[in-house]
Amino acid sequence: MTTTTTRTTPRDLHQALADAFNRRNLDEILGLYAEGATLAPQPGQSVTGKKEIAQALQGFLAVPGTMRIDTVYTLEAGPLALTRSLWSIREGSETRIEARGTEVMVRGADGNWRFAVDHPFGADDKSW
Image (cartoon, rainbow, N blue to C red):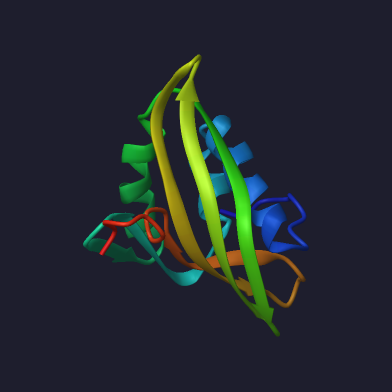
């Protein structure tokens, strides 16, 4: 469950996630998460660990369309980064999902960034 995509900046990690999603490659997506990572697949719910994240991601992968992620904000502090994103899944001219996320990323010993905490709806007004 690793990926060969180089992710030397937090922005690279966002792009790698969109690319893997658009290929519907669950194994590659899971390789973008650190061991013990937490994902909030919907407001008020969170899952921890790659097995649980894989199950939660099935809902996202079932949404037809192409994902785009724009990095809105990044604050790096050593091997950690706090980011905000604006992401969407669109099919043609129809927007299926659009939200503002917050993420905590960690840089591994290999120099690649991975998600430690991923809250795809964390910066939306009603995400809490």
